[in-house]
Amino acid sequence: MNAARYSEGEALDFVHATSTGETMADPTADYWTVADIADHWGVTPQTIRTYRSRKRGELPEPDKVFGRSPVWRPATILDFQRPGQGARTDLPERPVGGEEPTT
Image (tube, rainbow, N blue to C red; front, side, top):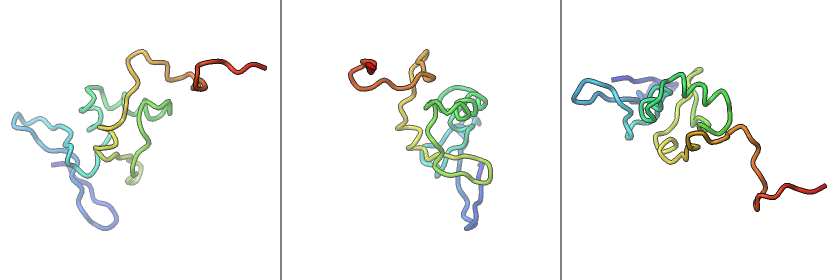
């Protein structure tokens, strides 16, 4: 089992092993790592790191950072609405009503 310790010395569970021996993200864990989110979404950990570095709303802000490692509560990821495939996350949001402001 993968566990981390933080300043109070309390162990935090991140993942558990399945009956096939593969690790998978545990929705009852205290926190999920980049690898756990990648496993849950079916992408590589590098994809998750890219989502985070682009800051385009493809990944929520981490709930906590241990050292340099960001972690998220499982509920944060499970409740997060991901942009659809091909969604333009690089464009600024339009005002409500979809009309451009006139000058």
